[in-house]
Length: 151
Image 1 (spheres, rainbow, N blue to C red):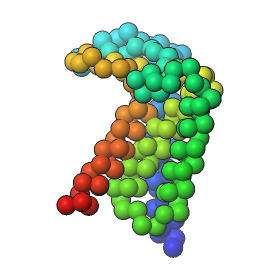
Image 2 (image 1 turned 60 degrees about the horizontal axis):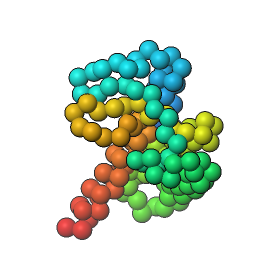
Image 3 (image 1 turned 135 degrees about the horizontal axis):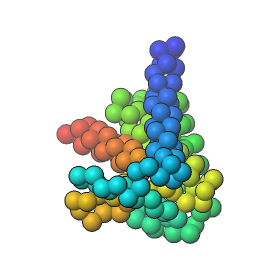
């Protein structure tokens, strides 16, 4: 029983770590501005205020998107702590998605927008942040596990 609780706390800690990294990088871009408009080989750092969700959908729907972030965060925390049939891929997936959802949710609730700053030079793609990367990693884990179990 203790081992299961420790495992669940590990995955919650992973989510918290992701939130901290996400918020720290957004702080550096927003307030320190040390790296804003710096061009690196594959990407450039730009400060973009995103008032919507992915690809700027639901732009201007701060309350709706904030509620979605809160509801999904609560749901994922519930899944991590209450569902005992999750395998390691599910737990990593939910932890990454939780960290990203919570990180972007903090921005939406307190600022009214999400800070995006990673702008790819190699393809024309919307600007994104660490939380977005985390959510996508989580979905990749879910898809991997789905395809692995359906073979």
